[in-house]
Image (cartoon, rainbow, N blue to C red; front, side, top):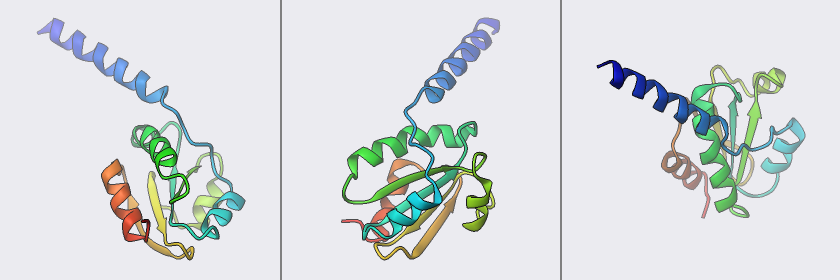
Length: 130
């Protein structure tokens, strides 16, 4: 039993180090977000923090989608602890919060909490991504 407990602790530390070392999107400023919303492409802005566990789990997913959907949709991240004024202006109440916009820059939906790749893609398609 003790060995099992030690092994599970080691595995959880290893998993967290993998999450912490995952690639991360740069923090988007208000100007970057405005430009994305005016680009004519659907967008998602993920409001989170570098030290929040669900946010860390989403970081590699967002990075992957940013690469895969380049030219089809804008994938943005804003660290609310570095810029809480911006999060307030978007009425973010908890992190992570993903705000989805259509190609005209109009908010079409939002989700609070962790969202997996399939969920992000479903929301982006609902926002008009082709």
